[in-house]
Image (cartoon, rainbow, N blue to C red; front, side, top):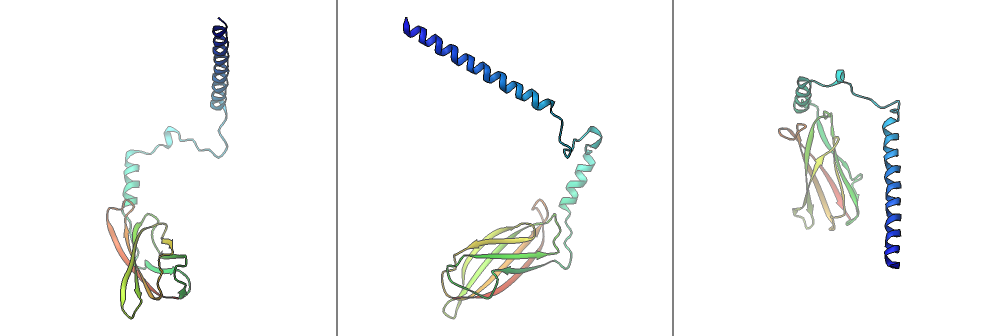
Length: 175
């Protein structure tokens, strides 16, 4: 009998706590729905909705990327001409005069001339993001002359069509 009373009291307390929690959360939701929007919040009304033709035109504009003749690529990092082996270095190539809606892929090749013979030491793949291909690594763990080559394939916004391929090269001395 005593155990039944304890169980009934515990269940009653749990129900009371649950009811209070439910009421409190539902009051918060009501308060949120009645709150005014901040000044900088834009509300799209029916008159500002885009028509199907506008959406198609916008998608066509993204896909129809025009690459200017003066677009070029340059390896800008690591800075300097020498660095220590196994030293963390940021490899970076910049594409100048690239339209905003262009995307691309980067293919890096590292050739090391360790014993008077240049060999392909490592390859890395990446993506062109806001006109830059970059990554950081410590993988050059041998001394010698290092030739870094990056091939950048520029594509349309949806990455369907190859529009242009650029290449850049730079030499380093690994100590």
